[in-house]
Image (tube, rainbow, N blue to C red; front, side, top):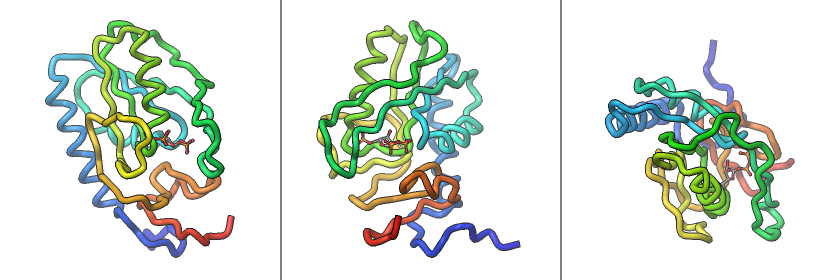
Amino acid sequence: MSTKTSPDLQVLFSREQIAERVAELGRQIDQDYAGENIVLLGVLKGAAIFLADLARHITVPNTFDFVAVSSYGKGQKTSGAVKLIKDVDQPIEGKNVIVVEDILDTGLTLDFLKKLFAQHRPRSLRIAALLDKPSRRLVKIDADYVGFSIPNKFVVGYGMDYAERFRNLPDICLMPPDYPE
Ligand code: PRP
């Protein structure tokens, strides 16, 4: 059976490239947190697939939790205000937390979450972002673990969507600006 599940979109990172990089990130996290426990805190929905794969390359004891934030209308550029719509299920006070994101873009979402979670007094707080688009940044924030740095292109697949579609694509693909909704 063919493994081609993408529509005719240009592949930016293949499933093989992603798998290799995610495994490297897992190994790095393992080294950095040797002897510790960690909480992998995914930001719904885009990070779900990255978290699932990353976690399977981490051998230090870990748990999962998820938060959801309201989208602030990327297309239309609204206020930029981010709102928490689903909080953590378990307290993170005193825990080693790694916030797991599919993409760090303007930085508004992670800046908001980092400040919010810091108030919970975790033992440590780091960010793992599969993709980083530094040219789009509106606030100064960096991820501690980055899969790939990319130019300002709209990408889909491996959790990332266009109007909620294409999250299931195994490759990360470029979405042409004129793609019909
Ligand atoms: C995406 C991504 C991050 C955020 C990053 O989420 O998952 O949460 O945008 O962008 P920023 O750095 O400009 O804040 P999106 O709002 O598309 O929701 P989704 O994860 O449900 O797709």
